[in-house]
Length: 173
Image (cartoon, rainbow, N blue to C red; front, side, top):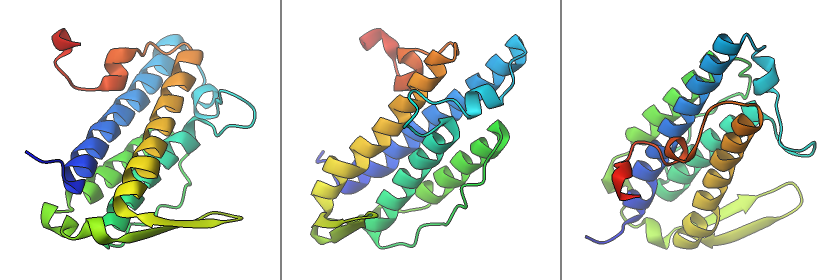
């Protein structure tokens, strides 16, 4: 079976979003079990110049939904980045999952020929869809998933490799 842009996005992003939902649930459970103020995790950063836990979750959501939208030409839903609680973050992840799961494989037909333009504050770049996905979309997604994992570890939340990899047959790893 060949690797299509659909296979490289929808199932991959959905799996990563499941991991994020589990991270949020584990963070909430940690706060409840340890009588920890949720803000200590929600506002936690790995370094002063990095985004906090809430923003990491938002970037994971944005990266996944924007990648799928850009590759298919479908308009991405707009989320306001106003989440301040674990429940609100879980709702955002669920909304992102619903959007991505609703994109059918046929929407990716011809996606390889799309040109994707990314606009940043001081520059922009254009690349073909394959380069966009493999050089930006997926690495950016996993950067924010990994950073979320690191924040939780630094805050004492019990997460490890199995949590990062998500649902998988672990005896083969």
